[in-house]
Image (tube, rainbow, N blue to C red; front, side, top):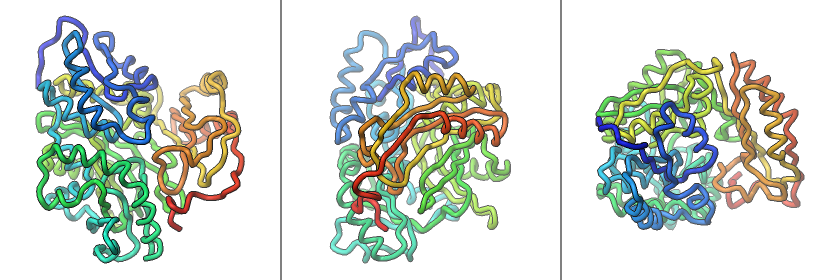
Length: 447
């Protein structure tokens, strides 16, 4: 993977570049030698009602070709469609990165389970494909209730439902039929460009996967990378959940408090799966559950990117945003991440959620947010809503809650994390009013 040093700065194109993460990229070691260019902004990719996959694949290469200088890397830290299109943007330029098929073997939930079952079957739930547009989709389900039903491609648990009985299944199918094409159609555009086995090709982006329950234990995400076939895990982050279905994230905490031997076993499972799918020269994160009573480890899913949600946590604890891993690999270098060189011993991302729809009456101003951050060391606040909007207008939320703000916190212990978060909530002017209609839309939330 080694590459020669350029005469000028490294020209790094970021698919979906936004100001919040540009500021993090500019703080990386050696950033003075990087020139970051937007290959589409976040607004271009996320502001419309559809994912502009065709535009990315047609306009993106033209923009790269028209660039006056040398293109050294094409990277991205967003989920679909960014993580999925990166191989197609890199390939004509001969840049490092995994093949499209390797990425799809991670991101297509059904294909991924088929590949995982070849090497780690004992760590997987029972699963089957479901066509939500079949005359009677329940006839094709081979699992007993309860189970999870989710699209083969989605983000943030969008259209993911905990199905306890036949009535709940039919309500989930109705909601899925109404929204699955938002991800499924653009995902199919990418699938059409890959070499897909016949058995997988029949399960396209507008299909679902049903999985038996594995979420009773403690959830943990491994952040890692594969470089020249060497799979390395550099951090483990605990994910804590809340809500009626236990599926809404309440916070991420780093470093993980799971026993070291459990983390090591997870890392070994991750390495077997990453090698099986042929994913190389790129970062990943893999989500697991550990059942403490039975000591069983379950693999939930693979993401072909760094988690941008975890980046501030690594900076607070290890001293560097883990965008560094993404950049190093994209430039053909073995990643160099510091370890425990940050300001704090632990860090968390708290997700402030509401379970029911509401109207946003008041949000803090930029000055008010800055005042809270200045008053409480190790705090970064992002508000996800604006005054006057309804929470039901938020895009791609999970099926059981709305995320209205996130708060990154660094502290010397877990009690300090919670104490700082309480201080933020007490000082953050964020107000809501009930709407005329209570609850989530029945088309999105089967009860």
